[in-house]
Image 1 (cartoon, helix red, strand yellow):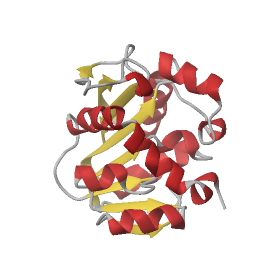
Image 2 (cartoon, helix red, strand yellow):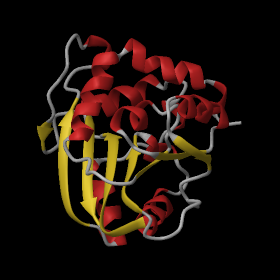
Image 3 (cartoon, helix red, strand yellow):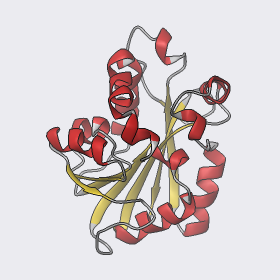
Length: 203
């Protein structure tokens, strides 16, 4: 069992305790999320998919998936390196926070590209390794992030371009520590200031 299987309730409750960070992240993702049939890789408890209208989700944590299913997401137990869907099936694929927890991130991105339709979108939300928030989590070593391999925005974009994605754009949010937020933070274009960055690219 992985850490998300054991502590799935603790993971889910973080979004209740840090609701303004959660809502701010949702707003940033909405800026780039297209319409159509979508998949979230690393859907977890369905916190993002259920709020964003992402129909399908996969995750290796069966305990977390039980909650996602209750939230209305069509889920399957699977890993991002081997998606249980046929090629060119989705209009978009979202990977929110999860990329830093997979063993072979480039393979996950290749699989995402495979299941995307031509000109389909990939949406990646990360804690930017080079941001104040990335540095905070690296030092804090939380029960979850001590297993993470954080990426910078430039590292993710390099992988995307190597795989063949194009037309990259960005939004950022979370300009203070999540525990300090008392209101919604509006997303801004670009990256370099916000701790949470959403990267969009086209197949």
